[in-house]
Image 1 (spheres, rainbow, N blue to C red):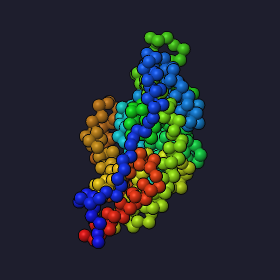
Image 2: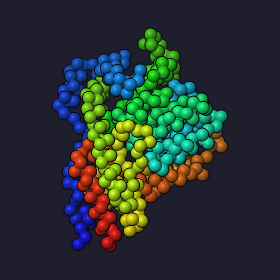
Image 3: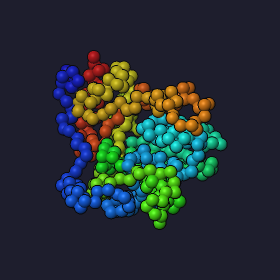
Image 4: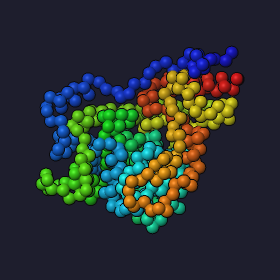
Length: 406
């Protein structure tokens, strides 16, 4: 007898909730201490902010860590500090959050979209060189969902062509490539502490680097163009106030104490869920073993083949799975270049040549991921138990049996 799906009124497979963010009284108390101190702001980039930056740099294995208001600004600071000029080109993937590309526009530069690898949904290193022109100045590989990009290949292309590499590690807190923490491998690495991220204070961002000159420029841009040793009302660069508060810093510092253990738990659960889903016809986990040594699973992604589910669309399958109690989503509905920003050239800057046209851009792997394949399970579930992973797999099997018997 066929078990009734939850979306049709049947029992849910997964009954528990997966809370996020996770906190305890130590988080509450450390923020309360800042309140009582009366030192809430960050005018001199000191106090708890400086302490957290020191701790995060040590965590990533870099010389410097520079906090800022969010991950988008982190990317923008890094790109501008790398010396791009108006009209320069920057290679980005089309399967990522809009900020990876929109910060390029903000810097008066041109995003050039290079398709993703069908195995990992990361920037396809083998396709980068064909997209390089005399105007190309940087590559922004995104460690999507916490899966490390193939950084050796990307760095080799960059070195050959004199390009800067800015890692978008906004999904990659604690993850590693060949033993090196993500963000520490290129010229700079950028992180987000937005509310959904694996390390969060609600909002916030960070850039890490080993480059002295990059750090000094980003530090100035983050602090209204001031420079080290200069006067308070002395401004050398066209920066802005991108500083975080003492509240965010002390909360992040306390949360950082748990990150290593949480990341290993996500890695372990993601690896186990891969094993379970590989046994289900029509479900394919993304490929592992291309250099990552720790996967942070900010998102757990698998590929869905509707032909093994009686033709049920990815959208409808995602709704069925969510109804079974698996916190999931169908992922990005379209590649970045199909967003109105790019289709309508709503750039509001002077440096994008009139010849730049995104209406005919096509990255087939990305389009297939958006239209047909990619299903996301949210990161907080990866802190669950092995039994939770088994229930996720059971929910998919339940849906498959039901739709194939209908």
